[in-house]
Length: 212
Image (cartoon, rainbow, N blue to C red; front, side):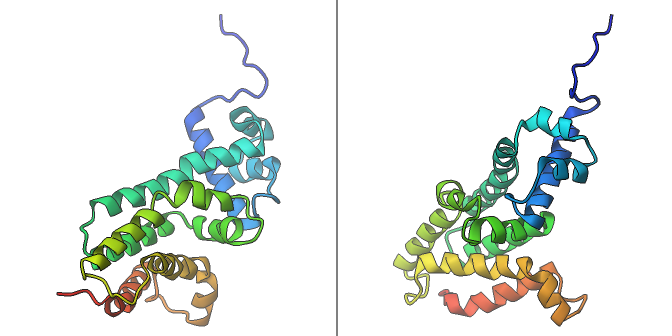
């Protein structure tokens, strides 16, 4: 005998439904901000009922926690893992970072506007996570490796390894976050994500002054 489902309990492939809700949450948070977003609006974006959002996450705070754990954290952990596998030469580290982050942003177009809204802007809901969760994965280890390369004479001594990381993040993240603006100023099909990554690498190559 089949027992009736309890109210709000999902049917079908629950994992896919949950993933779709996380996708909708990421897009909604990036578009209007975490504080302005509602569970009802996220449910509408995902094409489900608010009861389903409540079933999986309970409230918006837990939904944000899930987004951090299952979307943001893996993205930065993946980039950190690629950097660990890269060689110790500064240019190789820079290439790995620029190409890796560029590919991540291209696959997740919600990330740049979310970064601006919730990390860069005052009062952003995710700002504290930059220092507690994300910095140990990429910025801090990368700065340490640049410092080690500098100590070996392989990096321009006039550069600050910490500020080099800040510059790298800005050079990659900002053009993606403002892409709809500058692509309107310079409309061209040639100025895609790959062209942008190549431009950044060429721009950086001489400043690093890597010894042959």
